[in-house]
Image 1: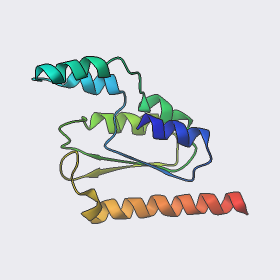
Image 2: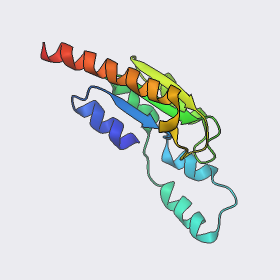
Image 3: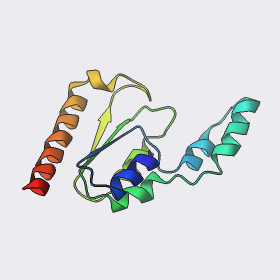
Amino acid sequence: SPHSVQVASRTDVDGLILESTFCELSEVAKSMLFLSVPQRLLRLALCRFRLRTELAVAGLTCPLLIAHSKSDGIIPPDHAARIYETAAEPKSLHWFRGGHNHEKSRQAKFRSAVAGLCDSAMTRHRKKVA
């Protein structure tokens, strides 16, 4: 989420994972079609917030793992690709199977991507304390 990215950019974190996140909340809200009346009211409220993950990642210096499903029906996959393009190195993008809230942790490729981020984070931390 943009909040975690903002915290990570202001503090000295060693790594960050963004999982199924959006570029801008108002974009997701605007893309919601065929909503009930209460959902439409929620969409109007969400469109007022300017939460912009895409811009926030540009200031990160820690290793970043972006994980997203190519079949996510809530947050379109192009959000992950755009965040990845905006982010500075070191960064990685992992596409997983399933929907928005699918059991990613059971997928070996996802666990491997997280392990890689942890290795990068530990290397970064060791350099800082050395």
